[in-house]
Image (cartoon, rainbow, N blue to C red; front, side, top):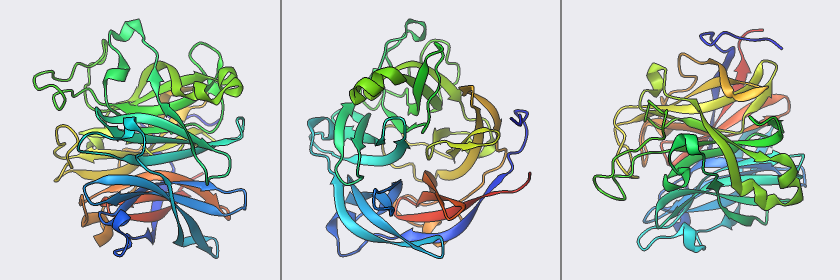
Amino acid sequence: MTRLNTDSALPYALNRVGVLMNADPTDPLEAEGVLNPATAWGPDGELYLFPRMVAAGNVSRIGRARVVIEDGVPVGVERQGVVLSPDEGFERGAHNAGVEDPRITFIPDLGVHVMTYVAYGPLGPRPALAVSADTISWRRLGPLHFTYQPHLSTDLNFFPNKDLVFFPEIVPGPDGRASFAMLHRPMWDLDWLRPGEGAPAPAGVADGRPSIWIAYVDAEAARRDLSALTSLRHSAPVAAPTMPFEVAKIGAGPPPLRVPEGWLLIHHGVTGPVARGFELSHGAVYRAGGMLLDPDDPARVLARSQEPWLSPETREETVGTLGNVVFPTAIERIAGTVYVFYGMADSAIGVAALERTAD
């Protein structure tokens, strides 16, 4: 296996292909945009997109659409309805509701598609999970739960959490057991819930900016009962904001992709003002970059991009519900090319090709 120094430039780039999906102005469920999709291959051999669809009042649902592919290139979609709505109590508040920002990982070892999503309920954004064998019917396994770790001196379940995504393969856990791993992004700010509460980061965490963490599920337990995927252990920080394009916060994007050097994680980095609570961060800029994680210890970063691979430049990326946003959330290989699907200004969905720039 080729090893890179932590300051090495990663030999990859993202190149725009085009806009894949715009909101349908005649559909009230898409009144405030389509964005931040997941993807999955169906049993019929077709690729499906699972966009976050935002209705008036910022109420999000997760849709399903067949991806139209021409000459190996994704060029559009055919809508097929809604697969998940905020129907459960933990997905709704008195004045808010939503199932948001899905990521889907097919885990061959379990034979199911695993969808992580954000349930926008009474206590703000909480992580949740659903599974499917056919990409049509999704069974909720419920909210995620993080096992208490005394050395952190806090309960991770207190805090809102976003940017959740599973690895597609078994990885070594920190206890030596075969594990399924999930990246997540806890946010320590509790002032939105209780003014004056502040941002009580866990013990030993010196950088309180939203950062990428990892947690693990025992593989044998998940094989016996899929609900074990909702019980996560051994949470630990992976990467904090470091590069100039991510000084405000970072978060994981699509499922990590196995490459010769390790696990390639495409992520987003944010600069500019970050709103308190969960208001839109107008004035912030979201860019996409990448980092390489150690296949023998996916909590360890081997290398990361010093410059963004994709920045908002086109009209669709700079003008929308939240301007100046590229937000990668899905990745698929089609006819030999790896494509990344991303949200554009919180209003539309774009696609870019991941290309290797050097051997």
